[in-house]
Image (cartoon, rainbow, N blue to C red; front, side, top):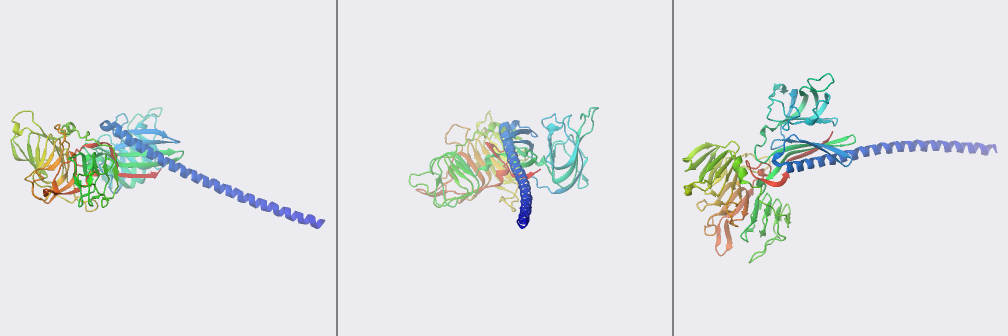
Length: 556
């Protein structure tokens, strides 16, 4: 019996030990599970914060769309999405994202007060705290710490900031953005009353290395405006920042080819290539092996079928896809009243313009000019206006354009644009990528037609984006880009358009394979892809079509 009791005691002790080990293991597993759940919870909160920040950025884009020209840069919008909130600021920006290098920055900036709609301020701390211009009120306490971004429009012109140990003047007309992985900042008010209320000027001190600096001094004064959106999403203690850079309304220069309608069978055929979007509010006729490197779309449910042959797409290269049954688009946003109002040079009556580098030679009988040398208009837009008085021969707002352009220019007119000779750039290297060195750009905007004249040379070069809008008259076939006498002119080689063409009624430039043989020009249209991001000056915008040039996000 004693042996049995002793054995039972040993078993009991073993069971208790095993139970203790199991309990320890269970506690360890629970602790590990709890830690993993916390990590998973934090990760889920970070993901939710990202989507909320992204949602705030999208709402800011919608806000820009709705506000249109009434938008005041510097606005901050806030809201709730699900279990989180967003705080999103909208600022004016340069036409391209910052490419400035890293600098050493130290000094004070006097911030504009928050009672003016034109002021801009955003401070993003590395701990996730953020301050906008609307926070700069009497109740805000001084704050110091490390920041990842300071965006500020200074109060008056200032010289209290040093960059790379040299005074960095701040211009009250521009906004500045300082960004880094981490920089020391102090946000303070220089006068407080007995109750501790801020009653003086708000100042921010910045001290950091490897700081990127960007200012909007190179920003667009053109009709197409650019914005940067900073959106902070917060869920519990997790914060994410989404930045959209270069947010802008797309201009009509985004199109390689656009037309409302046409005379029936104008074919796109082998040898033609389009690197920008192509759209038609009618049938598109395709044959052989043309190349489309951007979306091609038509409002029709099928490709066009001709009288003698049907479209054949077996060999067509749709490298970015196609869309049939697409929504119809309208040229209503091409507003000539707006263009003439914005033009810094307005010329009345029939005019000849010869581009001569950074100058223009103007002939206009009403102004008494014969190849008169003139400088570029200050904002890059010339408008040729129809006269309201005799003599009738010089009355029409038609302009002939030729020559070589060194710079950025748009020419708009009340009637026709005529092209009788080559139009080229001083630097014709318009290819994308590292080899792109040209900063020249030309826009030609006609309220009636854009016409290649019968006197134009063979193998004609036209470096420009062209719009023939057609509303100057009531004809259904008005608003065309076409070649004069295209069906009787001898075979003239290639019509080389380096830019893009938007026209209401698609005009003809030549014929091929018909009763007349080959006449006029063969098309060689090369889309200038620079115009997607930076169109010619004052170029009309497409309604409710927005895009951004840069996108990034990071945790705070």
